Image: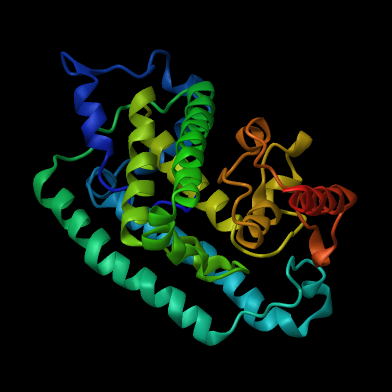
Length: 310
């Protein structure tokens, strides 16, 4: 669910395994001028030493995570005075305070110092540089590899998440840390027990190995994962959020994950909705302004009636 700052130095691992006589297995056939992404990939030229460094994924993920969260933190602190901003808030009776921000940032800081930093240093010392092919990935591979990786992680975390709510020992000693806040805000994304941080990072990292992704695809996948994870925790239902752009309720977004923090035995999927619907753990979400749609009211009525019969 939470975006993965543990995505470090992994590029070299699967690339080295995918080399046959020095040639990578991903599709690089065709001329460079036929690749739509080639101009983007060519930005590496003259900066190869930086991009092939095992530290580059760390710098990219950490820098993007904090940069992406910062505007939403400002919305929380300043937006409480703006009526139009509050009209997009999901739990309108909850405010984000400076003490909450310091608390969540404090745990995030120590997780980075005690776990991310040592792992990054180890990668830098013991791993070779990332292989950078001449050609960019095809647009088809670039898109489907990321979608496939997201789908794989979505199922993996659905199982992990469900089990850490289903078994009290796992919830009490690991996942309960993330649920200290019933009303999520951006910094809650990485407000995790170290074991959850490591697990989520490992799952996200290894998913790209399955598809022999191009380095550009991997780096983009890291950014997309962070965007989707942070958006799920911002506590707002802005019109520009991804779940409002995809049809048929494919993506859950902040409304769905807010509902999970309010009703912890529902909505276990981090990104999408299909597994929650298949296994009957889906709960309809509130809308902007804390409005409860008919679907949610019907769900709550059914839940109350079910409890009466038990």
